[in-house]
Length: 407
Ligand code: HEM
Image 1 (cartoon, rainbow, N blue to C red):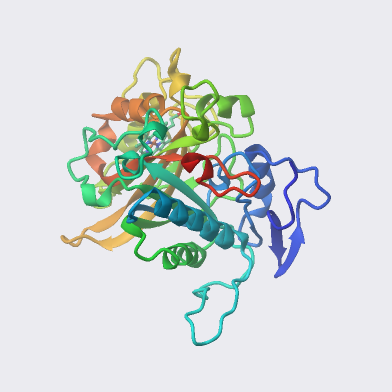
Image 2: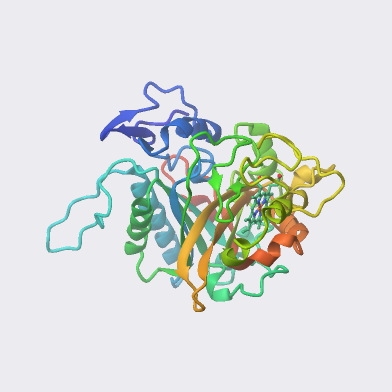
């Protein structure tokens, strides 16, 4: 399938030009990632396709400079109203990702566009997930629940995790080239669903992007100062992504879920004042990587394979021990840093909006987090909230994003 000009174009100095002119660009996530790696950064912004690709574009798109994560609840009476609301949500997301101008209305009405950014490409991709609670007894969807979808349980270091900053019927993750574009996307979505989509919790984030990110090279640094994302699996390998990232036919999942993926979101506070007083050697031992180069201890390059020498205490050895069978626990990590001012004790409220995607929630996030329980890093971090969601595949033809779930 070929992406249309409307689906994928870049703006150079304000003029929109087609990248996919003449076709030949197949609409798989792999091509999407390759195309946008070169085009998606500061000087040029891309429009990410919303439909006609297999998976929601933002999952495998290159890391974004800005974004946000949110959990929401739906407040509607019945299945019919839910269907109307979700179809409308899908349309709102498609419009804001397209970068196209909104209809201009008479001054007697509120404008349809909040006007925060000019029309045109903003590198905006919105990822929507559905939470376990959407499948409760309100809408008759219980038999369509993805088989592993469950409320996020409490893990060992979760004493500060609160229900009011966790879970939700839906999750929205916005990726964009600027904070303004991310806020614009959120405002455009929420203004159209006042009273029916009710935000539960939210965090805004950012990334300082390295221009040459790719397999074996992290997209940027987290707020502990370490390169983060280095060992993410190579997304250009379709066999690999089918194996660990996308739900497949034959997984025993409901039909609508094939091509989707499980999403784990964790808002993780970092005790940065404490970290900043910790010796560098200790910091590096915690991760088993050098802070400056990102290389595993005892190795030269960031992309070198670690040699744990039989000691599996560090963050990366627990997360991925590279022992027989541990490839079943691979996940795609996509995160944002956040800096949220001061807490009630005037300590810096900073951390990581951790997000991971995996074909199996149990084999991926849950297994890895259980292995991390008790790690040395725990002294320096406190999860605050988040949730487990399932991200449906991208819509095809004229259908909306939730059509197959509700059919
Ligand atoms: C604030 C919390 C966290 C921080 C600061 C952090 C930081 C890091 C760093 C610096 C690396 C090494 C570079 C890289 O490969 O990306 C890493 C690797 C990794 N982390 Fe985390 N991480 C955090 C939480 C988590 C959580 C909650 C999980 C999953 C449950 C996780 C799973 C992983 C995995 C799978 C790797 C790759 C290991 C490998 O294949 O070598 N991390 N993390």
